[in-house]
Length: 431
Image (tube, rainbow, N blue to C red):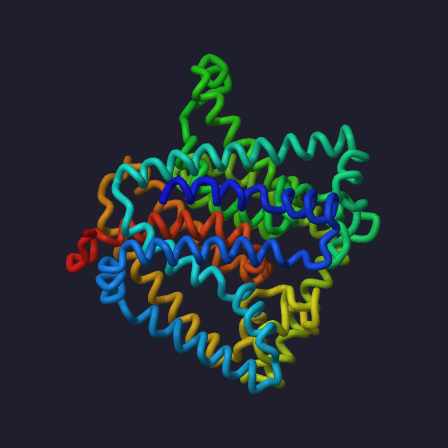
């Protein structure tokens, strides 16, 4: 299982570069969605093999907490039905599920895989995650440095000039804040907002992995190499967030750092106020720098609400959000409005109930972990903080269409969740 999981996650990390260099630089694919479908098919086949090998265990797993799965089946059935009634093609239905609800399938399959893991495997996964994250960060900075030094090289291997995203066209070497705007950094990801989302998703985890203590600058420079490396790793992670110029990532990076450092803030109130003021000025500055985008986001959200009011039953899957790059017509710049447009308000509320059920399970898991110095406890605490950011970032972004984010975050999170959930399911036993 681990022999597949590690290479697959590395492949996902490198996916955007692979598609750009091979697809646009070498082959100039007419159907750039084929690699994405191939990647998803690899995951489905892997899960199918795991289920077949552990058929007896899957029966035990299915007896535990049926409610989320029942709600999911009802949700998918209605989504497909309403889409067909609205005149959608099966292709629209398939792609709509892929870009709007894929992460739920990843959640279910990864949770089952986590239940099959031993403590030793979980430790190996966490070690692998630590090095995967820091390597992804470093490679992202190196790639950006090469873009600065040798931009012509990137134009030769499949990238296009500085621009905004346009489907069927070479991905731009840098995305801009607007027409002739400031370049935004995206590491090795396909889009600055997706990179920012990834950085925020794992910010609390990075701090759990690399957290260290020193009270003065002198202590820092006299510390051992490991403390210096840990501190630099966290600072580079935060710098990468800043370079995306993603306002949403800024805001929720601040929220996460505030929760993590709440005790320090209480004892250093004046310093915290100054830092907060500087950060606020920075966010306002970026909003002004991206003024056209700021106004566009606000108009898109309020304008899309009118579509929801006009058609509360929804317009069918693959109508809004990333669908505008194909045959969609509405870009709400809001994940929740996107769901209401695609599946309707009633079924959006049912999806919300599904999320609440899942959150209840996570809360029970957290209560079973008592050792605050255990790395799984620290990561789970970090995930709990990020959950708040996840729920509110959806107001500003629709990055769930990005499968890199889906796989990298949800596979790891839900494998860990599946493993820890065995502690509260007394009826479940790995055979």
